[in-house]
Each structure stands twice: as C-alpha cells, then as structure tokens.
Length: 328
Image (cartoon, one colour):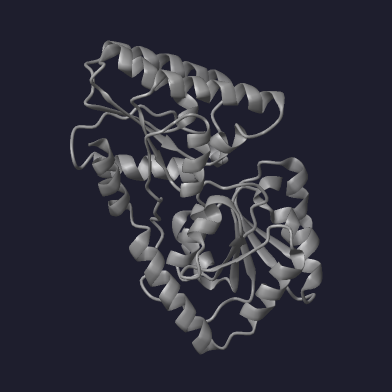
C-alpha cells in the first residue's frame, strides 16, 4: 500500500479502539493497482447515499481532499457534524499545474473550500498544508504520518546493494538512478528494486544488468531489505506530500538518501538521513560512495541513532492521538 492507503488503514484501526467508528472504504486491486473508474463512481454514489440516510455522525472524516463532495453530503444530513478532511501530496500538488486538467481540478477543490468553510483539514506536512491554504482552505493542522515497520535492534553490516522501494513509474525516480547515477559508480554497484510496475516503459529498467527486481514484497520482507541495504534511495522526481518509504527505512535501520524537496525534505532531516538535489546525479553518487566507505562502527552509530529517532517520532499512536485532538 502507498502512504495514503496505509494512513487510512492504520488510523482506522486505532480510532476504532477509542470510540464508535463506521468505515466506508473502496478496496484496491491486486498488485497495488487503483480501483477501476466504474468502481470509484459507484463508491462515491453509494457513500453519498449512506451519508444522507444514516444518523448524523459527531465527526465525519474524509480520507482525501479529492472526495470532498462526500463531506458536503454529510453536512446536508447533519449541520452540527464536525467535518475533517485529510490532505495528501499528489492531488493538491496537481492543482498547481498549468494543464487544462490541473486548472479544472484546481477549480474543483477551490469550490470545496467555498462550500466547506467550517471544515478542518489535516495535512501530513507543512508543505502540503501550504498548498491547501493557497487554494482557499484556512483551518489546517499538520499531523505527520508514521510507520508500522520497525526493527528491534540496529542491523550489523549490509549486503552492499542499493535499494529502491516504491511504484515503478517515472515520478518515483528509479530511471534517474539507473540511467544517471549508476554510471558514475563502480561497475559492481547494483540496485535491488521492490514494488509494483505502474509504467510499462519504466519497467524496461528492470532488465538492466545492474538491477535486481524483487517484485512486490510483504511488510516483513521489505523491513529486511531496508535493514540489509547499503543505502535506501528515495529519488522522487516530483513533489511528495510526505515520503513514507524514508521513515519506514530509517525505522528498520536503513541509511536513507532522498530528494531534497517538498514534504520529503521535511521528513529526511539530519536526524533521519541524507538529502540531495533530485536532478544532481553527481551529488547522489558522491553521497553513496561516502556511505559505502563507512566503517562498521560509523554505520552502527548512525543507524542506531536514526532508527531510535524514526521510531519515536513517527508512531501511529501519536497520529491517532493528534487526530483525535483535531476532532475537538
């Protein structure tokens, strides 16, 4: 699951332990693919009907700004209902584009700001909150995400490989690493890739002699890969609302190197890992070479500190408590 799906799942599990909770959710498809358009339309229609017909809730929490009309339907049934909407990265950032689709989407979410003046928004980073304010939303608080993947103790040594974990699509940056960074490293350098294929052209990278494709991994397998990698790369080429992979990797004892932009740069502070310009291949290669040259003591000291920091700060119980406080 991606960051948004993980957020909805984990938050629902914890809030359900704290009070009466009804969840309306649309499952994805096998392999991590998004639901079909007919399925999304049917979910929107059926959820709207349920919100109109059921007893008004004290709080109606909408999992993504993209479906803000469901919040509006909730206000029609019960005007005293507290409306809370979660903010993620890709959709709000898409509204900043210059294409016709971006302009249409911008008008769509600005309409939501006009109709839902009493709504409180929860952003997962200051960067994403600033984008929402630019579209007319005013009541926004920031609650960073968390990770379920954690290691008990700092790993010893590494397997000598780089690791990329995420959707295989141009925006996530695997192509940048394979085409521009690997040629600057020793011929023995190789990268292990875990994730689902979203772009057929990008999938051709998996045939590169220095790439080892692991497929879609389960949580325990992924945690092991994070811990054993020489360096975990998060080379996003477009803005990220948060960057969950970076937190997961650090909490498992991985050494993180990520793109220095948007919400990702808020997460990957010096206490958690390293950042480099998303388009500067030489900077990525230089940092990777530096990490590969660490002594065992240097690496152990670094991963012990970053692992403790990530596990303490990015905890789901903290997310649930902060979210409950946001409900008022």
